[in-house]
Picture 1 (cartoon, rainbow, N blue to C red):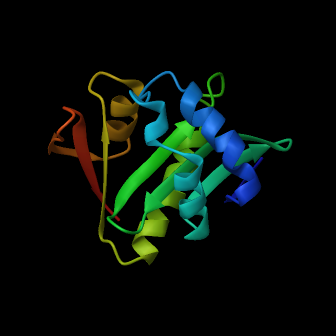
Picture 2: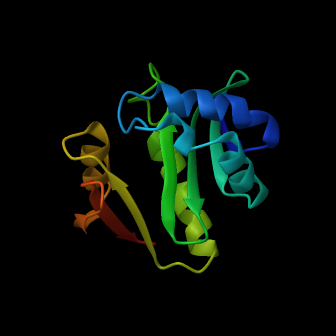
Amino acid sequence: MTDRRAVPSDIQRIMTIRHAVRENRLSDPNSVTAADCAAFIERSEIWVWEEDGLILGFSAGDVRDGWIWALFVAPGHEGRGIGRALLPLACNTLRVAGYRVATLSTSEGTRAERFYRADGWTATGRNHKGEIVFEKRL
């Protein structure tokens, strides 16, 4: 088991995980593209969790705006601590970029909402999609 920065050859697996998740599914699957992933990789912002050569999760902090862009674990591998290991890496990406607070959003009533609350994130309102916006000091 290892965490590492993503490389371009990881994009296919990252996209597979993103489109397979059970929560926070994309209403428009084309709204997150392989080109988006490539840009994040170029800026060194995507982290992956790999076991036996297979990526099981990924996280990314967007240095352009201080948001956690992604934290996803492949279906069937949730609840093993992969997300808990990846989130601090994305937060550190933001901290190194000079942010003092990280922001993210997720749907109400989800495992993700419970996860973020348990991890000390504070709800600060709603976004235009009705999702809960959370912040956490870095």
